[in-house]
Length: 264
Image 1 (cartoon, one colour):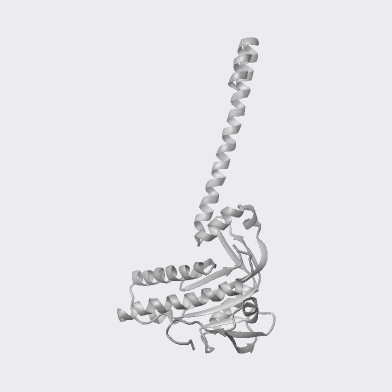
Image 2 (spheres, one colour; image 1 turned 180 degrees about the vertical axis):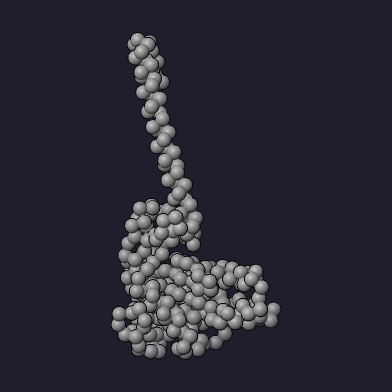
């Protein structure tokens, strides 16, 4: 553009040169405006990613682009829910800051166990964690990775409990639920966004975690979750309806070896 303006100034009358200069400035102004809009869009995208719970989810969205997560998609996945048993009792008498420190310690240990097994943490809600298997990695073996995560969670809580015992504190145990099926995955919300999975599969996984409070097991898995894996240590414990499920389910307990003997 400067070269063209120079040639124009040397070969054309002054009014034409001024007109070309004005056109060049207008083009430059439009380009600056486009760059500013792109920068604002990039900033909004980064801010949206920053609102997401897990860094792995932010990386997933950054790698796939913002359009696909916003539209969402449906796929098969294994969902894990884990919840601290007796959380209220564990926190009785603690100052609010100590409760926050306890939850931070739990979340750090839970995130390490789940992510090491190949899981994607969907969210933490209080003392509960939800994780997905098969979202960022669609290779076979979601069930095995979910079972590995459940065992890693139990082992992490056992190690934490041993440390707590030295300080005279009670142990930390989890109830874990696993279910596999179709889920809808995508970004929900506008200003306050959440990348999450929804559907009956998610609801059933959470119900299974809650049912560990009344059934003799720490980890309860649906037949769909067990069949997707290769673990031979699953043992059927019940055949019953589960709230949120469309049919009666065969429910299995999984051995979670924490190094302290067999789980109940």
